[in-house]
Image (tube, rainbow, N blue to C red; front, side, top):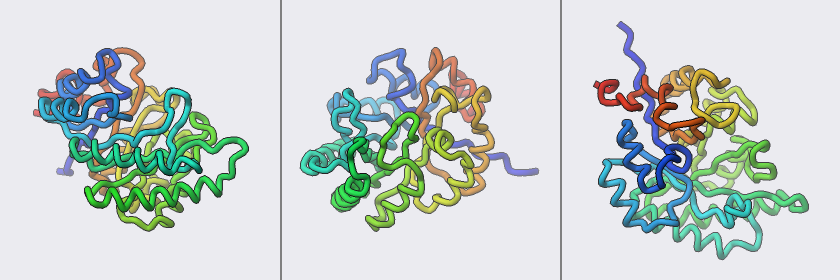
Length: 275
């Protein structure tokens, strides 16, 4: 008898799912449906000790969060590649590493930033490489990986890193073992498709995966154009055993929308499903 496929290791992105409750209550909501790991965008509005307490209370593992992104509310999407912001960037990494130590989080996503219309992409890339080189040396002390995530040009026009190839180029130039690629299947489908082929081509650098449905960035279910059952099977075949962040916007009630995850032990009946 053939060995059944193992379940993908799904992590709840608390910035996106469970919007029905306040952020600090989302830890309990995630645990209640069977998630054992969480990620989110930014923890900095909350005391790190408070977040640590929520993780401990609900038996959750923190697997990823982002470094401070600059003025996020007014459209900034990272400062690592912005000339003139180097001092601010270093302070932001110090803050992120401080949180990571308390939360025992092994990965920090460092957003590159948007290149202005009149900006020189080459100069922005130079700054990005320099900043990442410094940040990698700081993160190495805590055994933390810094993640580069390519973002698609439709949702994030002007973002400095738009493809896995661009990310690889930066990673190879920095030359630090703790700079890794964050492969988001949503952004990959929006940008280039051929998801498993491009994943395989970059797998040696990939340290984290995220998913969402296309179009709409909603539940990764059968109504969407990405066949995630095939994706999960492909990841297993390729030997990827890391976390898969569920970074999507629920169409309605989060728990009702988790039918897609029931085969993987996530949902209101998770104990029965995982028995």
